[in-house]
Length: 282
Picture 1 (cartoon, rainbow, N blue to C red):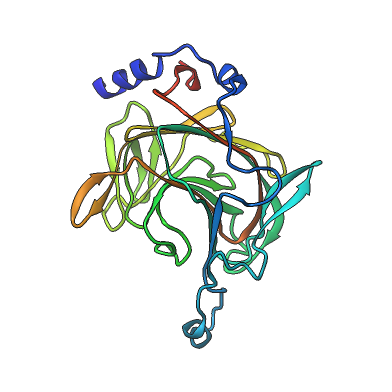
Picture 2: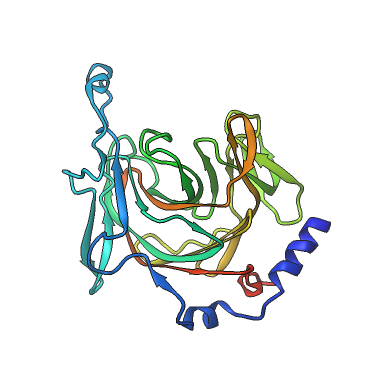
């Protein structure tokens, strides 16, 4: 309870509304509306279910995109980033960030690819991304994930060893649901709890509509916001460094290509000195 009250005090410390903040001139566009300047791409090996072929395939690697997985196209009368979904891959900022508010919009396309043709449309916003490419599923960096997946937008996943503490209640052996007044649980791969926490509530717009995501990162705390609704507050971001737990509070921003066509626009960032109060319905 004391932790929850402390979070409320932190979040009520400013009267700046999301609408007011959006009008301020200090936003920096991460997508320039013309090309992918300021971003690197990393593309895994193509998918195959043939083990003999799989052993021979190599990643396309860094800034080598012959399949045009990442492109800039016109959609809804403006330039947007298109992620084809064809091959597991990531596109990340060349710069690292700390203590910021990130905002972007995404919209699902129509295409799905193996091995996820029958699965939900899937992507992801990875933050505090650090270290080498391809350490997670052969495609992504170690990072904290703000899940972007049909019906699951706002969930948390720890990628390649990233760890967060999240207040959750246990629903069953594999589901831990976000509850701001529940005890903290540590979400870490290869532990009984695992690396996935489920958001609450569901705030995603119907497939085919644009969604606005806001990510607040300050110190070792993060807040996932979907269409203006807080879906999760996460505490004590960390990772193992040479066998010792260390804070994980900065890094690059990476968008996933994970079997589904998806479009991104209005990707922008601004520094913060605290987490604004009015992102919550207090």
